Length: 146
Length: 145
Image (cartoon, rainbow over all chains, first blue to last red):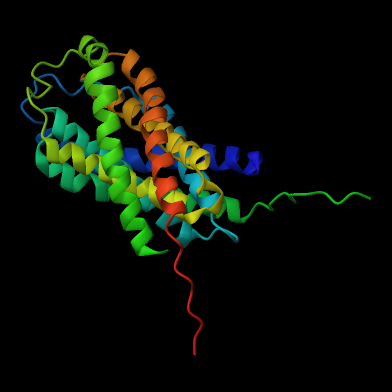
């Protein structure tokens, strides 16, 4: 595994995921999420911790980059999108289902809506990561002895 | 991708995740989680909805199985533990800090401790999934006639 490609994919993916996440989850669907809070009171922060949300995208970007890099061949935008979308959908289906099962934070509709939206957002992040990695040459694995 | 292997890995992994998750989060460290709830009131159910927790486990089991089944190097018990642990740590690091950024449900130790516990949770599931997949031969690709 090429550490330079992993690092660049993680950083580029983290920035892309934060930007796409902000557009989808705060601008486009923020009011929808706020309208579907469950019976818990005071569950949503009055001000989101944006620095933490930016930081939280780095581990996911690393996971998507690892997924893209573990596939054979040169990554493509389409394969990056699929890899990111599958990871995003399954991770957030799990997280949303867990939160619904254990807490009163969200109504059930969020378990249905959030995983596909996360799949879309993280799929776009995966496509951006793949587009960048496709332009980087892979380091040769084993150097031949002279 | 062999759908039979993916299905078996997901079912086995989901069951293991549920059992190991119960032992870790409901028995071993339940008091720690209860002591670190955030400022939201009425945030936690008196009784969890079991089918939703099971769904959560099966979704992650599918992701771990896809990763293990897609990489020959992961199809050992150690490789499965490593793959599951990496997925569990990174997925829940992201999810815990994202939730902490939006919600008042947990106080700060939880987003730090929970991803570390997920290494064990998902790692054990990954090891079991790999152990099962090792015993199921991959379907041979049939050449065109």
